[in-house]
Amino acid sequence: MATYKEIHGTNIEAVATDPSNPVEGQVWYNTTSNVLKGEAATTAGAWASGNNMNTPTQDGGGSGIYTAALHFGGYNPSGGDQDKTELYNGTNWTEVNNLQTSTASNAGFGTSTSSVSAGSASPDYTANTELWNGTNWTEVNNLNTATGFRAGCGPDVTSGLVFGGYGPNPAGVRDTTESWNGTNWTEVNDLNLGRYILAGDGSATAALAAGGYDGTNRVANTETWNGTNWTEVNDLNTARRQILSAGPSTSQLAYGGESSGTAYLANTEEWNGSNWTETSDLNTARYNVGRAGNTSNALASGGFDGTATNVTEEWTGAGSGVTRTFTDS
Image (cartoon, rainbow, N blue to C red; front, side, top):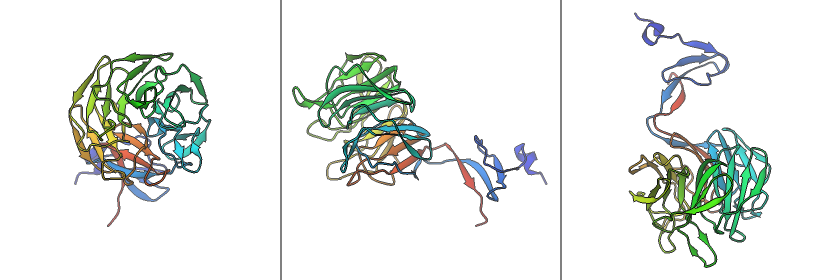
């Protein structure tokens, strides 16, 4: 009879701690917990509960990846607009240094060590921009237009894009797009459909905008940005506003939101570069969620589910590695 090693090319290891980067098919015995474990691939994406934020917050900015994420600003009914910043390490949230100015409905993008917070809708519409260097926030050059409820995307503080929104003077829905070069904002070509509280992610040269509110209707419209122009592409399956998304323009995850007749949604949809496909829902239906990550691993933090919440959920996409514990039942 063939041995396990002859079949799989390796022995079953006995280790005190689980391997940090197991490969699919790897099996080991954990001598600390006295259990047999193995690495499998997920067949479908799913949300799982993570540890809560320290402060329940809605309408905040988010950036980073699911193991190193930042949540900043937002609104809490008992404390009003927030200047708080929280850092997620994949397990727990830790309060770090505050924004210079309390803000809500701000666009955020970047990493946990290099982020941008741009614009605000509360208490006044502002053009404020702040940069995070991993330790502190610093005020820098403002947006050209004071606007809140925008979507934002970018890899770090050197490059980014914000689009859509709602602002004063005159009051109304915006189709404007501004590009950030690390020092200044420049107005570039507009969205085809003006809207606010929309989803968006990607980069300054390849972005995606989805859903939102055009001042009359919740919309399902999706547009892609090629660095110069926006192009209308296939719609979301569910029209909604106050929706968030995470990932590059060719592979994005959109989740939560609010649709006509429904206070808050758990719907999650995945974009493959051409079409949206409905996939596993959030465990807690909510909107105005903080976001980080991509279609393989994403984070949904805080939001509104009837009140401001501190709930955190982690997304593991289809095909991602997951550790299983073997049992005799």
